[in-house]
Image 1 (tube, helix red, strand yellow):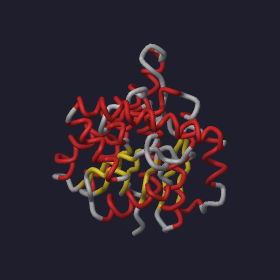
Image 2 (cartoon, one colour):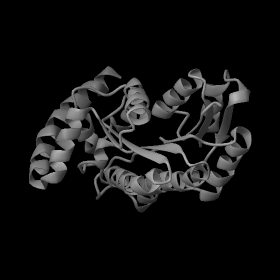
Image 3 (cartoon, helix red, strand yellow):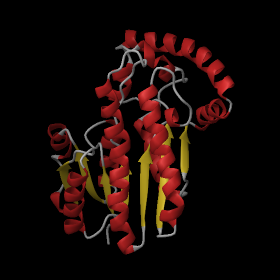
Image 4 (cartoon, helix red, strand yellow):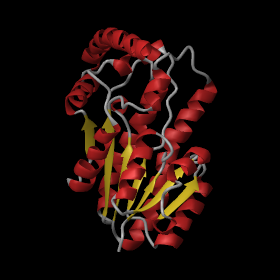
Length: 269
């Protein structure tokens, strides 16, 4: 029996790439996103027998339940959940609005929690499954200039690690992937924000193919709980979080590097 994967954020970036990969590998794919025009354009070549393409507002728990039930009715079960959908609002605390807080928390945090809870309930009925939540290295160490995004990803990472032991007892694996900057539209969005300089302090942005390896090799293959990509930047993030004074020093140093690389990328646009 084919395995079924449920993916959020399927219309763009990481979610789009992973949806295509799972489809090409013969999975039943439930591809969801709020941007239905983009989603339909991307999936128009898919065969309908093993796919379900649905609009999903991840901030609406009732909408989650309706789409999940459609998936269960069509495929019988959900084996894998990938909570990929996410947004970012760069800005210093003096600049972002109260609405920006709701926007980040509703999508990045509540969306992941809703999906995990609702689909875990279905997985528990069959006694197996794998939930993969996308956080960020900004959820490992606090990122200056991305306070809202960083806080939301700390929440995703903390939630994922907290529910992992209890769900493992029910036969459900949980993994949380924490990548550095990935070359998607989220990178482009941050180019014009000085507050996002620290995001660009790595040697080079990751590719969506790096996320494919994190999912298939590290999460589904090795059943790793926490996956930091790349590992050396993950170590730096852990170090900065464990020793805040070192983290503040690293922030100043890496921000200078990030500003230079951010400016260089803007010129290449």
